[in-house]
Amino acid sequence: MAQASKNARTSSATQKFFCSCGGEVKMKTIFENGKVKNLAECEKCKRTERRPSDFK
Image 1 (tube, rainbow, N blue to C red):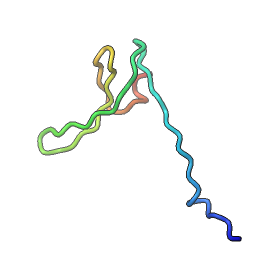
Image 2 (image 1 turned 180 degrees about the vertical axis):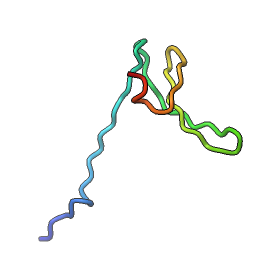
Image 3 (image 1 turned 90 degrees about the vertical axis):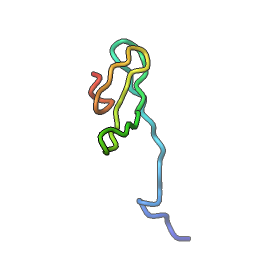
Image 4 (image 1 turned 120 degrees about the horizontal axis):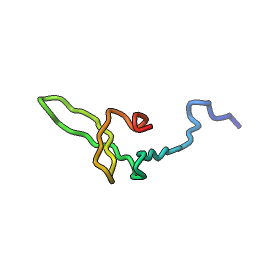
């Protein structure tokens, strides 16, 4: 029996990011000036950053 390659083995891990105010950070996609932008936004205080790790 053949072993599955290391690339075929997948693990699903999701990270949840939280703002300093206690709200959860969600990713949003915005189409602006002909470009697609991904923004991270806090649901509670509506603060936006470029990526979720910037909320620290």
